[in-house]
Image 1 (cartoon, one colour):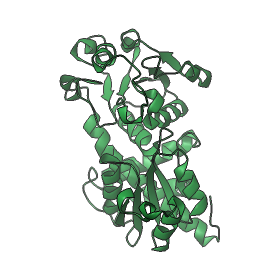
Image 2 (image 1 turned 180 degrees about the vertical axis):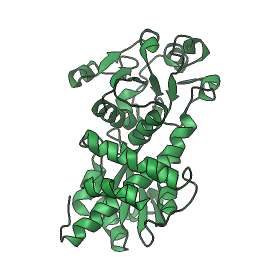
Image 3 (image 1 turned 90 degrees about the horizontal axis):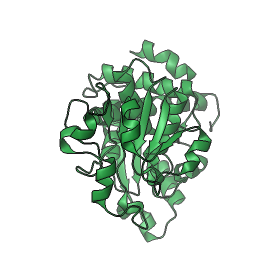
Length: 326
């Protein structure tokens, strides 16, 4: 296994994973290739391999999380590393300490990675400037969620020979979705045609200026799509209701059995979770043969193993060379 990982490790130069917008297509492919190797080596992310024994991952989460937080913890443990969990309610920020000082305190305990989630965009970028350890973005407000984008890409790649040339639609709450932003950059760089679909109040026409197709009617684009990624309506981030009712949204945008009749026979149905059954997707579709939602969850462990492994290798190499930042 280490021999198959070696060329990927040699090509990877970053101590931080802050977003997909700044990565090249080759760097994204490297992460996906390493994730696939590690998934197979751990028998579907179930067995441990001692690649990172003696290292420690600190999860610094200031927003609620089930999938991402547990996935990072499992990824670290599958590679033999230890984990430390920090949350906003139990941290010294509740006593007035700044976020950066809290992170520096955690780093001083000898951790090798800080995985952070925060409601403020740019928070992991701040930590990358302030800390000497590796920093991974687990979601910064509505900005980016790079490992979610990567696990979605990995899932698509496992079902299709190539992402290049596929038509992939992101449907739903684009305005508040960090998942959407990481997905669009990753998909575009790997050669997919990306359609951004949802109500006009949640999908800006300005996406066209960045080279993406914008649509407001799911039924019109559905027959062309190879992949649908159904994004959750994030009511917690909305200051006002962007559509008259949940019932109306579901009528126009929910993927249901009737709409499946309009879709390609081999369409992939994805959702980053947590899913709102009956809003973005109905149960028969979520649990149906086209759904790869649970595969996405499993692939989340794989891509996070890859990120931890590659960042650690780059950090070791840079420290050996006497450099502290990359």
